[in-house]
Structures are given as structure tokens and as C-alpha cells.
Image (cartoon, rainbow, N blue to C red; front, side, top):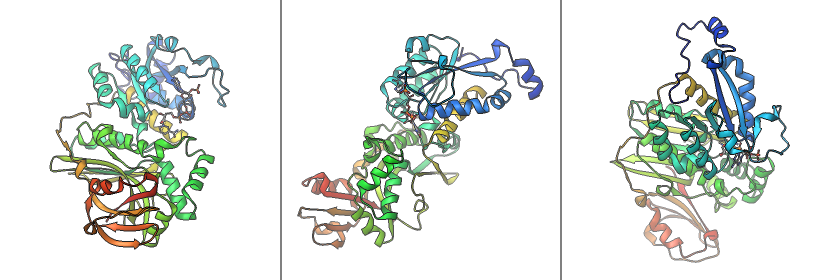
Length: 427
Ligand SMILES: NC(=O)c1ccc[n+]([C@@H]2O[C@H](COP(=O)([O-])OP(=O)(O)OC[C@H]3O[C@@H](n4cnc5c(N)ncnc54)[C@H](OP(=O)(O)O)[C@@H]3O)[C@@H](O)[C@H]2O)c1
């Protein structure tokens, strides 16, 4: 079974072709995989797996087999070439198959996926997931439980889609203290912000275009409200900083209030607006945030447009590393999922990313220079906050000196949420 079996045990002489003829057709050299979810990512995983199966088998010196696929609706029309007998919607049937040693879970939402992860544990099965809602909600618990049973819990695709950031971060924390992570982690909001900037269209037109192209969900609130970025930076910062940073520790501001007026006003001053997730450690304290941020052309994030993602992090030895790529997509995400599969089978080192670095949250002191727009209301803002008045009338627009975010919010709380926007200005 998964916890005890050493994969690749026959391949020490590296004679791929000869070894290959040895393991083919031998039941003790078949690794059975169970796939949960057969939508965009699931089909991408399945198709890539089938396309690369021969090569993967040669590389990993085992026969590989997707034995069952658990879906929600067994009767659904599916535009994919697959033996329908692999599909089941019967959870018990799926989990009672003791031949399955590795689970690949690619469904949305945390609650069913959490049950699946616990069942995988109970059955001594490794668990690979692309589900950021699951990883973000249960990261510490699942990492610990799987490690205790000497099983792998891998989640490369849950952050940054195609970008191999989790593996790289795990590698770098062996030698480095990570002090800073900065990223654009959500392709949908980046697409919307770029489209407004380039085409001078309204937020709602840009959102509609994103939905028509299939880049945004019909209910896009997880993206727009910054929750998707929050989950990803929560996972990355916990991993990178070696301290448990849960969802509630993150200051989250989405782009729902950012208007085309804001983007155009900042464009005239040389800025683009991006939804930036950031995590910083200083003097034993951390601040993790998701904030619409105005950046200038000297910033390497400036040209990360449309659906592209970027992740930069700084280690005390390695300096700053940056990764750019597709944050989503059928085959891009499947690629990350399958790289986890290779890691499970090739049995690489997997020490726990959880360390007790003992950092303290200081998000209540989060400071910055901000752009603020207030429409349809008149309120008094302390003069010492204001650096520059951009527009005096309706809307009232100003930039601030470096101030604490929560002190600014205290004043803005008096007005309706839809009537103001705050954008951080990065120097
Ligand atoms: N799409 C991307 O580019 C991307 C990128 C990175 C990460 N992710 C993450 O990957 C996961 C899958 O995304 P997706 O885009 O592939 O979603 P999707 O296209 O909506 O597909 C979801 C699949 O999960 C199945 N499913 C839903 N609830 C289930 C349940 N309770 N039990 C068993 N199966 C269930 C569905 O079954 P039916 O087919 O029967 O409806 C469907 O096959 C999500 O967590 C997402 O956040 C996606």
C-alpha cells in the first residue's frame, strides 16, 4: 500500500528499456490512481496522462493506470475520449477500491474534498490536489496527518496554475529564510484590470467579456473580492515563512470598488493597477495582504498583463526569484498536477513545510501611501493624511502620505462601500 510501498524499486541500474520489459504485465508493478473530478483540470490530467503514459512508465519503472474517476453527475455529456466504465458517482465504491494507491483530487470547494482527503488517509493513499479552497482551509491539519502516516499531500497546482512555485519554495526554504513574497495570483482580475486600462471600458463590460471568454465564473465573487488570491498567498506565506498564517490573518481588499475612472486617473500619472498579494516578514513580525495596487513602469509587475501571473520571493541567501506564467488553464494546471504525481512515485524527499518560526501577525499596523476616491459623499479627512488632492468635487480624490490603513478605514467606514475606492500606491 501507499505508505509502505517503495516505488521505483527496480530501477537502480537505469537500463530503461530492459527494465521496462521486466515490469510490463506484472501486477506488482502497477500503480493504480483514482481521479476525483473530471471537469477542466480533470480532463486535462487524464488527456496528458494518456498522451505521456508510455514515457512516464519508462521513467518511473512502473505501469500506471487511472483505475476509477469519481464525478458528481454520472449522466453528464462529456466531450472526452474515455472508457465510461471508469466513471462512477459512488463515493463508497471509489474509496473501497484497495488497489488505488494515489488519489488526484480536482474538484471545487473545500467540504467534500476534505472528506475525500480524510478517506484517502484512512485508506493509506497519497493525495494530490489542485483545490486551493481545500488546501487553504485545512493546510496544517492535512500536511501533518499525511506526514504522520508517511504519505504525501501535494498541492502544486493550487497556487499559480502552471507556475512550479510550491516545489521551488520547498527547495529554497531548506537554505533560506524567506522574507518577502509578492505576487499577482489571479488571472481573472488581472484580465479585467488590463482590459479596463487598455480599452477604457467600464468594470462591468470588462467582467462581462471575461465571463463570455470563460475566464470568469458566472459568480465571480471569489476572484473579484480577492478571496482566491488570499487563499494562494495564505498557502505560500505559510510555506515560505514556516509559520501558520491562516485566512483570517490576511488583510483582503478586492477590486470590486475599483472603477474605470480610478484606472484612468492613475494611468495619466504613469500607473497601472494590479491586484497584488504580498507577504512580508520584518523583525519577527509578518504582514500578509491582498490589495489593489498602483505600480509604475519600473516595477517588473507592470507588464504582467491579462491572465498572466507572477510570483516573486526573496530568500536571505538566494535574493529575489521571480516566476511568470499561466495561472490557470486546462493543460497548464494539469501539468502541475502530474508533476506532483511524478514526485509521489519517484519518492523524492518530502519534509514537512511546517516549521515553528514563531512569527507574530502585525497586520493592524499595515501602512502605505494610498489613492482614495470618494463619490457622492462629503466627509472630513484629516489634513495630515492628505498628500495631494487630485479632484476636489464629486468625486473627491486624493493621495495620502504614508498612513495606517485602518486609520483611513475608520473615516471611510462612515460612507457606503460602493462610494469609495482605496488603491495602494507602491513606490
Ligand atoms: N480551471 C483551472 O484552470 C484551475 C487552475 C488551478 C486550480 N484549479 C482548481 O482545480 C479544481 C477543479 O477546477 P475545474 O476548473 O476543473 O472545475 P470544473 O471544470 O468545474 O470541474 C469540476 C469537476 O469536479 C466534479 N465534482 C464537483 N463536485 C464534486 C464532488 N462533490 N464529488 C466528486 N466530483 C465532484 C465535477 O463533476 P461533474 O463533471 O459530474 O459535474 C467536475 O467533473 C478547483 O478546485 C479549482 O479551483 C482550477
